Length: 335
Ligand code: WQD
Image (tube, rainbow, N blue to C red; front, side, top):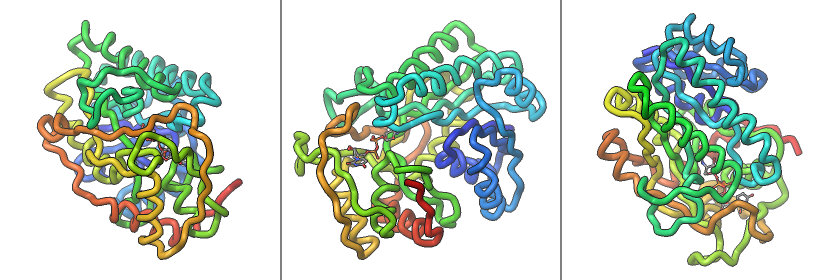
C-alpha cells in the first residue's frame, strides 16, 4: 500500500516509516523540515531506500489533496501534532489549532482524494483520571488536560464522520508512553529545548548535559509517591501501527490501546537508567505538574486479539537503546 505519514515531531513517525518501508511505499509529510533532512538520511541508511518527503502543514488542505492524489495514497497515518501534557496546559490554543484543526483539514482532503483510510494516533490521556487499572477500551473517557481533550475531540469527530459513511475505514491507536530507540541507534528522540517527557530528560541528566532531573511530585497515592506510567518500546508501538494497516480492511472507528501493560514509577525509571548508564542521577522534587494523573497503564488484550500484536521488548531495552543513542549522538541541547 501507499502510505502517507503525517508527522510533526518525527520520533514515532520516523520509526514507523522504518518498519513500513518493508512492504509498503511510504511518503513522509512533515511540518518541521529542519529536523527531517538529517533523519531522512538516516532512514535511507536503515531502509536502503529514499523516503519521499513533502514539507507541509497538515492544515494545508489543498496541498494535502494534491499530494494524496499524486502519490496515489491508500492510507494516511496521522501522528501527534503536539503531544506534551504539561505544555498543553500552558498553551491550550496551540494544541487545538494543531491537533484538532489539523484533523479538520485532513479529512476533506482524504475524502476528495478518495483515500478514506486513516490510522489515527490517539492517546492514553483520553481516559483522564483512571477509575480502574489496567485501562481497557471500555474505560470512560474524559481528559484532564488540553492535549488529551484535543485527542478526544478528534476521536469523537472521526466517529461522527465514519459512522454514516461506510467509505471510511479508521483505527484509533491509544498509545501510552513511547520510549526507546530503533536497534540501529540512528533515529531517536532528540527534542529541542527542555524535554517535556521523562525519558529524554533523564538521558540528558545522565549524559551530564543537564544538572538534575525535576521530579513532579512524590506524594501521589502510589507505592513510592511518584507517577506510575506504562512505558512501551517505540518499536513495539510502531509494530502496532503496521498491524493496524491490515486491521483497517475489517473495521471502522475502533479505539485500540497500545501499551506494555505494566506500570513503572518515576523512581523506578530513574533507578533503571542509573543501572543502564552507570551514573548517579541527581533529582529534586517539585509540585505536581498540571494535567498529570497519578497512575496510568494499559490492558492491551484487544490489540493482542484484533491485531495479533504484543509488546515484548523489556524496560531494559528501552533504557539501553536510549542511553546508546544519547551517547553516540552526544545530543546537543538547547536550554
Ligand atoms: C511521565 C511521568 C510525570 C517529566 C506522555 C506523552 C503523551 C502520551 C502519554 C501519547 C509523569 C513525570 C515527567 C519530568 C517528571 N502519549 N515527569 N519530571 O505526561 O505520561 O505523557 O505519554 O499520546 O503524548 O507525552 O509522559 O514523560 O511527560 O511523564 O517527574 O521532567 O514522569 O509527572 O508521572 P506523560 P511524561
